[in-house]
Amino acid sequence: MLRLSQWSALLMTLLLWTAAGYAEYPLNIAGYVTRVRGEVVIENAARRHPLTLGEPLHIGDRIMTGSEARLEARMQDGTTLTLGANTEFVIRQVAGVAPQKDRGSLFELFKGVFRAVTAQTTAEAPSREDWRVQTPVATIGIRGTELWGGFNLLDAGSDTLDVVMLAGKGVYVESAGQRVELQQAGEGTTAPGAGQPPLPARAWGDEKLQAAVQTVAW
Image 1 (tube, rainbow, N blue to C red):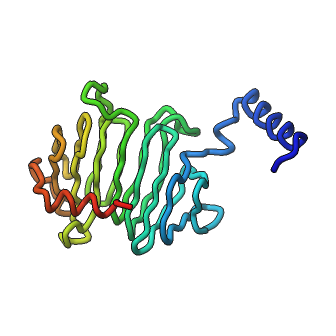
Image 2 (tube, one colour):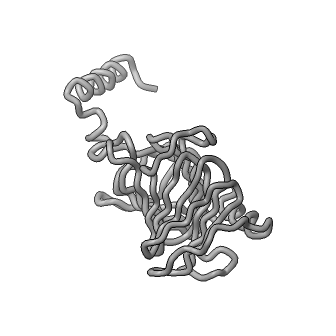
Image 3 (cartoon, rainbow, N blue to C red):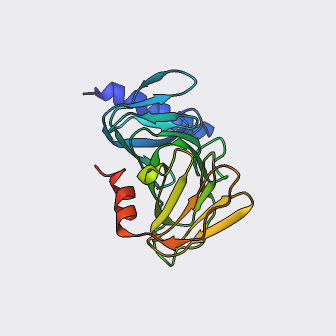
C-alpha cells in the first residue's frame, strides 16, 4: 500500500502534468485491458511482453492473441473492444488521446476477429464516421453501434472479410471504391478479397451469426 508521502508525490506529478498541458501526451494511454484469457502479447517500439489485466494500452501498440485467447479492452473514446483467437490488431489513434486526439479513432485488423461496442449504440445517436478499422481487404466504418468483423469465418478463406452489424445506428464497409451500408441488426456483408468490392448487404442466417459471435465469446 502506498504511504501518504507517496500518494502526495503522485498527486503532485499529475497536477504538474495537467498544468503544463501534458497530462495525456506523455502517457499516450489509449485504453485499458479489462479482461484477458490465454496468450495475449503486446508489441511496440519499446518492447514485446504478455498483456495482463488492468494494463494500459497505447497508441501504436500491436496486439496479438494466441489460440483460444481472448482480450477485452475499454478504450478512452468509450468503445469496448473484444479480440478473438489468432488475431493481430493495431491501435493507430483514439479520439481524445494525443497526439491526434481530434482526428477520431483508427485501428487496423491484419488477421483474426474482433467485436466492437462504441459509445453510442442507440438508433437516435447522431451519424459519425470517425471510428474506423482498416484491413488489407476493406475499411469498416461505424456510426455508434455494435458490430463483429473478421477473417475466415466458417472457413471462408484467410483473405475473406465478413462484417455484421449486431445493434445500433449503422456500419459501412468500403473497398474497391464501393461502399455497402448495414442499417439493421443482423445485416452483414462480405469483402471477398483485396481489390474486390463488398457484396450487397443481406440478413445473416442463425448459423453464420452464431459462428461469428462464438469467436469472441468468453
